[in-house]
Length: 315
Length: 315
Image 1 (tube, rainbow over the protein chains, first blue to last red):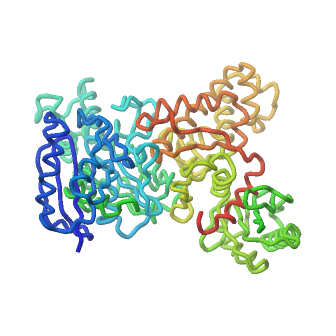
Image 2 (spheres, each protein chain N blue to C red):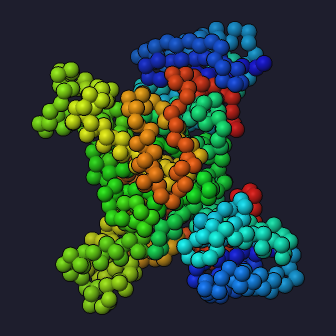
């Protein structure tokens, strides 16, 4: 039976896997990106490692997930911040010309959404929103079984909705984005500002350099009853709940799938989010909308890319 | 050539029209709903008026737009607040059984969205969000040429996203909904509260009973330079801009179409909204997203229903 190759390209590491059409990973490889090598050298290594994984297998398609901005239709990468020098490079054509099979490209959050939709938590539904909660907050939206690409592949930027109009400045330049309020980076920044304003926390006994305070440390302190950590963590979950309620109110999907490192920290996270969504999204039958953790774990990058390849133009 | 019948059912009036497949209204009729008559009597009048409009023409389908909640697939109306007594009534079957042509049902905001999409401002695009700004704020979302029905026909409730977490109470029970901040009803309520707290306005010279202050009166006062009216109106547009920016950030449509009575009042409304969307939706190429007024005017109800009938299961 034909196999699919999935290539997951990040700023620090690249993962490539070979899977069957049911998303069973048969073999995979992982190596550092070393961005300073430049695009051509990196693509050469991607091609070499892909050739080894193919190794005589019949390949139906290759899917690629990569940090954006990119042009999924033209198969080009458009100067992503984490891949310096990848300026309008024809990644799809560079790989297709070697292996002579269809090659499809999608941004990493959309690829992960397609992975969970096709192989993971969303297998049984036709309408699903995927959110990844990590240093940032990204996502992908699938409605009527199709990914919402948006204008110039900008759809699904769920982390950049405004939740608090006068809230903290976001990296994107806007104020009060969900990402500024509830991402790992946002939580740590808010916590540091409260420390700087004189608030006390057990965290300062654990971590000397404030710049090294992470969302994980704050979550640990909250579990131990540290009042400042509880306050900051609860507030982050509150705004996250509002952000999810807004998405639910606007597109009313059958399922919201939450992935990323942050969902590991709060045991009561899902209970609390469901409460907030129920309270806020009053015109939607929220009891029928599943809010669930992602299922693919660390394989989401590669399996997302596999889903991109498998679904091809039908995604 | 086959014709389409569109039936637009509201709490105060019902409009029925006959159109060709290009949305040209050939004949139409309008009459008061008189809800107190009850479902059966009203449906009988709808059927009589429809039969007169058909009058020998060959009819391809009948489309109905009606206030929700409703079940579009099963063709039933589920106790809408503005149609008391319409409790789980089989409207589609009651009409289909008389005329023996396909009959399709959609809630009124979704029908209007389909009308603008197929016959109006959105004719050339595949991804469009329609918002109606009136006493309330409703909407409909069309992506990849398909309406986003959502779970139990609850998709597209764009007016009930939370814009201000601690904002004013909305009719839906949530706080800080876009509808509570920027709808005609919301604007008037906020204005009345400011008057009650001691603020002055020229409006009190025009309208003696505070309950009769409308968004239109406030818009007129703002145009004349009344400071309170300007403050309240600007704030409503500001939150409306944020609400539209959030929709744009989440689904990144090609076009946002604004309809409803409110868009007539502010001449600079579209300029200001585009500014706010550009400022807030920073990860979306907002210069490529058209934000435009609706084109169908007062015919949007009937032509929306015609679009529902014409598109049928392909909507």
